[in-house]
Image (cartoon, rainbow, N blue to C red; front, side):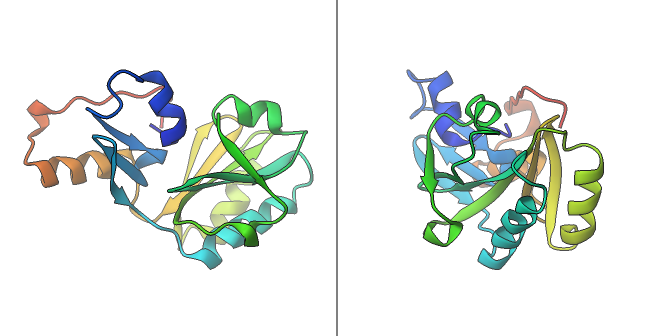
Length: 174
């Protein structure tokens, strides 16, 4: 899923420590309640993505996803959209306060991420990161080569599972 671990575990509270979650479009995998795979972004990359968001005004913001939590700068304009997908957000005064293994930046833009914003971010970051429109208002930024399919493949290889032994599902067309 493109959703983060904190959100996904609320959907499966009875079995969250018994199954595997491929979270954040493959950038973070939880297996039986333990981190299994983390595709950590370089600090200067995720901070550059966050800074780029600020050039779009208050209708745009960065949600920083890390192993220990999800972080954003308080923004009442995008907060209603963010709260639909991120249930446990830690607010910081600036992103220099984030001391975590960051594996995804989710960009929320109330005017939509599938047009000019995606093209702009793609021209700036496509050689360093994989950009995916995860929802009409959200674009996710992960390391190159990271996506849901690579997450499934990594898990299959590591656990010795075939495609016939694997089931995956999600909630959006990415």
